[in-house]
Image (cartoon, rainbow, N blue to C red; front, side, top):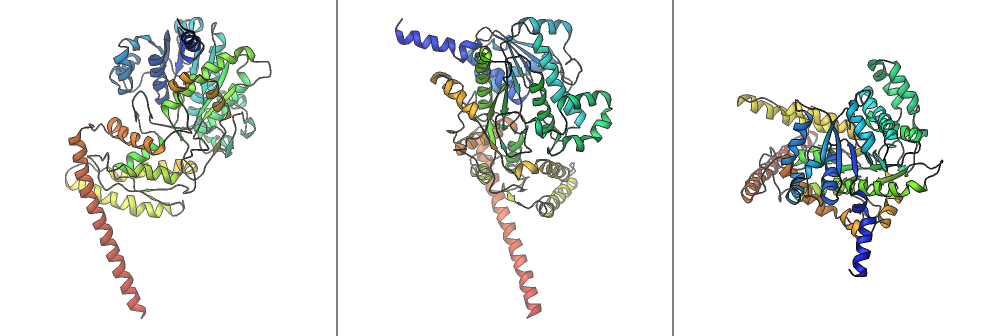
Length: 510
């Protein structure tokens, strides 16, 4: 064996892949968007011994059925081709963060306590308008219960708490540190209050407790960080704060997404010709990060947390790693819209109802009036046509939901944040060149234009379920051009009518 080979082998053993070899991982939020990508990456790139994935039954499917569905999920296709038995290393733990004891039975708890080396706590409700008592139970109390469980674990080497870059969004320049001063009440007091008061009473107190936070999601995630700060004790723990998570960029497949998450929902609506109007700060920035970059950063931060374990002292606070767009490669809101539209002819949908376009009304006061003409009024005509053809009307109801979601997101669409990423940048520097390649999360080199090309292709394939065949694409293009002609003909007609009315008014005063 040559010296170079010896160094290479040593680097691998000391690197991220070597760290995870033969480890037992306990992951909550396993069926979530990021959770699934973390599991896939662990199984594909490491020799992890076992993954205990906490799941709860959903929509009539028990936990084993939910796991079995992954065999056909495109996310796991590359993994299963290389390692056909990889999913056998996943063991399901029945649990629910809504339950007082996490819903984990005694035998499973005993198993976790004796075997687990790494905990990744990612379970959360991400609904912005979740009732306070629900968000508090899942996001905040669930965090406390997970910390208590971790303190019993005999072989624990690292614990990662997955938060959000917006957990402190009441300020607009956010460093990688804790901000308990922005809470109206500390986490322990709020949790104690929730145990004494009814659910209805807690929800009535929401405006007072939430304070300047824009919603219960960011508020309860801030409370969860306060729980971590107060109760982590001597745990080898760190916090990961990703900004808005979107479709995969590179792996295991480009553009993969499994639900209408944030900005992808916006692109989805525009691509169908349904969403034609939105509101955002045209000079602001979009804080977006690909989900595969998030998984890589999370796994790397766990590796570093384990290395830092021996260097901690009694007054050390947990390290915080933030993943957000690089200051040298920011994404303007206007560029996000441009990138969303520039490839509309490359991957057109076959079920568009109108030519894809979107206009911005930056003044929130004017938006409802404009939305009536862009959305609601055409929606009534469309639903009338559906009724006359014997089908169920749906567009007006859909627009009510869209407008409600835009109102919920207004604070984030009309403001921009600066996120410090010094710890995350240092983490990349400490990784070997091979680890930086294998666990890439370099936001500075991300090509946004190319990324959105992949994201649009992925949205068409994974969300609308349209085949990537030439025949399907040609069908979409034919519809695209027909709707384009119809759209501009209609716009021309409106301009002619407006010109005629203006000419008539001018004549009345001459």
